[in-house]
Amino acid sequence: MLALAIFLLTVALVLLRPRRLGIGGAALLGAAVSLGSGTVSWRSLPALWDLVWDPTLTFLGLVVISLILEQAGFFRWAALHVARWGAGSGRRLFPLLVLLGALVSAVLGNDGAVLILTPVVLTLLLESGLDSAAALAFVVATGFVADTTSLPFVTSNLTNILAARYFAIPFDAYAAVMLPVDAVALMATLGLLWVFFRHSIALRYPPDSLARPRDAVRDPVLFKAGFVVLGAALAAYFLTARLGVPVSAVTGVAALALLVLGLRPGAGPRPLQPRRLAADAPWQIVAFGLGMYVVVYGLRNAGLVAFYSRAVEWLAAHGVVAATLGVGTLSALLSAIANNLPAVLIGSIGVHGAGGLTPLTREAAVYANIVGCDLGPKLTPIGSLATLIWLHTLARRGERIGWGRYLRWGLILTPPILFATLASLAAWLCIIR
Image (cartoon, rainbow, N blue to C red; front, side, top):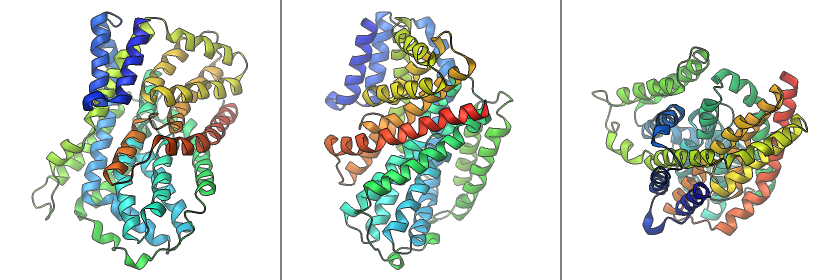
């Protein structure tokens, strides 16, 4: 019960943030209490570090890449192109922005997509002459799709990285399962967002009033290199998947290449600013992740995760569909209540500890846990760090979204998207296995 109390207290501190305590500080405090109380042994730290170092460094590398590309004008250039392709029609612009959000989330991760793309899209829409109420529908869609379509690659979501690392899933094997599933998630998300916001997007805007996309580019050399580096990194993920090369090594090389290029002599009138990169990096998220790993390990040591394992065993005994839908729903609810980072760890440990599973039901449970932890957080404002970043970014721009308003969106949109995605996962696994 002590381990459970520490976990619940840590989650409460993360949500309430007394005296402006950051989410990272709250998690590290919970980790310190876990270690001090003995629910987690100091001798367990090397094993924990072995589990989390690759996901943590991969996440940092992706965020650095995103911030460098943002300083080069990469995202504003893309958003301006999308706005021009919309040709003045809100109904045409809406799906284009959703697709842009899905693409950025897939390649650079959901947190990077929300961190960078949200202010860019909001600024662009206001420059187009839309009022804040009309622009909000587009921004909500962009933020929503960043999570619901963060399934296709290991690097698309920190929860993916953690689960793939825990179960030693190679990058290519993961993509072979999740790419088709993500396509279903994208179609379901776009369809439901279109129906939900159809009245808000029935508008016109003057595309000629927007700046030219090329004017958004601040460093042409770094901008062009961004395409090459991203393409090379994605190829390297696949090529090195079976060679034992850590995902963070590929990500780190890509980030370093862009950093060196951005700091080259004569980089232009607006060179890369390392201090700004360091200031904008999400250190609170890194601290949150590291602290929560320790706290959740305490639940595992106390045997509380065994209850999750028993539930997985019961669901798997009823077949692949039950295992997929059941585990995915459990992970989604846990993510919505306690945030998806601790949820994916609890789910991974729980699935690993479940006995009597067939190879197919075990694989279904592993991937369903990931789907639930990627999509389920959209049920509540506290479900994922990406949502917290999104809300904070909007608040800084004067767009404050209350819990009641968000819950209305989340509770209506998330369940059907989650069900469609989990059903497609079960069907796809039965086809390929």
